[in-house]
Length: 206
Image 1 (cartoon, rainbow, N blue to C red):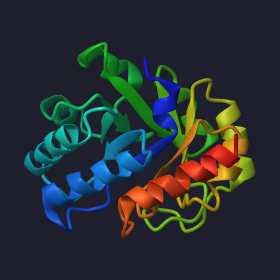
Image 2: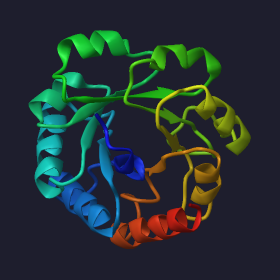
Image 3: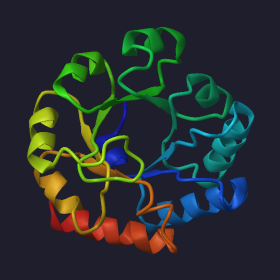
């Protein structure tokens, strides 16, 4: 079972602009600064590269959970702790049948219709809360909409999309167990300092 503390600050990977080793180094720095989980999300990379990245992240940050976006096969081959799927991915029940019992399963939710499909997940990621360059929609759903969706999920909820140290407190007050960020964490010039700033904001919001 996933420790709620692991959701406090999730670092989502952005790119391999500095190679697998560079990504692992940035992730390790973010963890030293207070990141509590890593999500491997590199949608344009091949399975072979994803497995190499997962293994490098696992080695660089062995003390925090590692989940892989969408690819259960990569998660298994790469030594990850779980998988995170979108609302249109395999059902949670189907994943549970093929994955080890220890595996963490997270799912993305963006509207009311997707909540039912999240039953059985260890956590739910809701967003984009704020406008985000990685999201398919231009505008975020906003804090109040996040609050409404979070209340119906029944499991710990992660806020994602446009999160920063400046706005993290608002979603924590709205029921988030934690926040996830891409560009504001692993895309930052100093991932360790960025993680510390997030954790400072989280501390003030609790």
